[in-house]
Length: 195
Image (cartoon, rainbow, N blue to C red):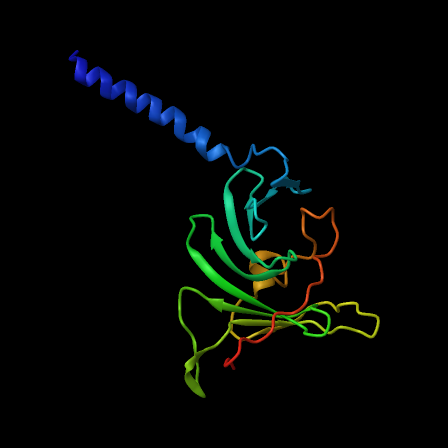
């Protein structure tokens, strides 16, 4: 056998042996200061990874067989509250983009608007405006407790909950704050000259 052909075969064997180890890296992640692993009763896993500056939180969901099924990347504010997120399928195709709205008086989450990333849907009354596919609203009672989500699905067919098993994409608790709700921070002010 020629030396060049031997080298190519050895490189190919090395590459084939290395790729499964790279794919398994996420599943075998160890809890640390920036990683949290949740094992679910059905055998599936959710891995949360945060950036060192706490402004990006990545949530990866794996099936019981170890297949990556869903990726959600949250952009966070300085208080650990999600400002927006993007949801991807297991092949890293962007499915949805989500924006979150907070009440100005106490910065509690009150709204969530989900937009389809694959098809731009425009408002029939105003074609320049993009229309969400799902809107989630929360009511805050007199004691400051948030209600269960009130979900408005604006598209026919299966709902977000039927597909993804949850009625909203909002983080109920931040996995890096020991199951405490996200911190309340002052709601962002509108920029000067803005709408």
